[in-house]
Length: 164
Length: 320
Image 1: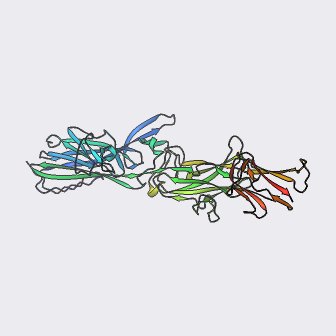
Image 2 (image 1 turned 135 degrees about the horizontal axis):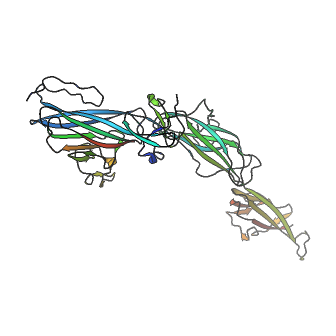
Image 3 (image 1 turned 30 degrees about the horizontal axis):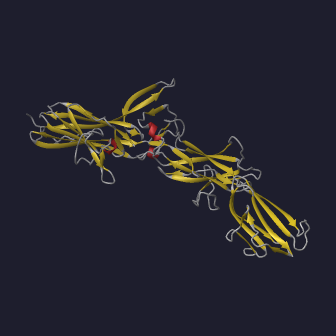
């Protein structure tokens, strides 16, 4: 097994991770975060056409699709991969939108201290009583990738959130 | 440069936007940072990756009439104010052009005259001399996200306006950043050079304020009847004169602090206990002779609605 013996720095695009590898590391996960939105174009005859375009400039009220792409680079298999993503500021998670093949998805309402499924999460009311959490309460999403990832394996986890 | 592009972004929350102001400020950058933790041969590693988006400017404005109910005015009154609130419901700073428009209601109405738009500088909701006159293009209100400005339309009521007539004026606000149909884009025209996009309010909002003429008037009739000791009607010494004072209110308004005062004639003597209001003896708190006003009867009618009907005061004197 050949180790990668150079320092690799990848910063070609905003959205690409900047990675500095230790001299003896045999591989790494290349991670990329990308946002998309739907753009509807209305033709002169009134017909509508929807395109998926990068979420570079986004209007309040718009639902953004966030993709987190991963790829195993190098020669080593990866185990125990867990992807976490805090829901961005001024955005609200869209119920039922989190997805990811072969991933166990859970949510947090306390900034990632504790995790649970939507039906088990609770938040405190002002009077101290508990109520069931709503998507607006979610602070973080977590994907636990269930299997060992072989070199070259890649995938995407995703969720939707609405800009307030 | 304003470009009318027939293009709009699909807005999942489009219905809700009309009622709820946007939170995310235009031009702000929102970062999404994902992190992955994993192990290779038992050694833990983490990596993260971020993506940014810039919040575009949504242009919206809401004008509401603030008086809550028709503003009561009287014929000939000057500087009568309708209060409006202009709120920047977009997510970035904006400047608004204001305009007033006469609205003609159905039914009995009048035309408000000499109308001007003022800032409610004194913050009283009515016209004050210190309120600053609005001049379009000169002092258009600059409002930050969610900021409001109270404005007044100040008019005179014609002297010929009749009771219960309505007068209506509309205040309109138009964004100088972008306006038009929902989704119209002013490319680069927003704060910090972001695109400004017209929201559900079309960048224009109007509200109508209503005046209502509310008059109050009283008719006053006085009559007398004489009863002589012998049964005749001659005004001779010892005869009794009964005076009847009839106060008849009218109009859609209420009158307040109505007081009837009538001096007892010279060479007569007030008959104690003879002072009646609507057939009932008047108590000390409501009326008197020679107490509130020397030498006169006084009856305090207080507040009366225009619809209250005739109020009848009677009292007797004897001729000395």
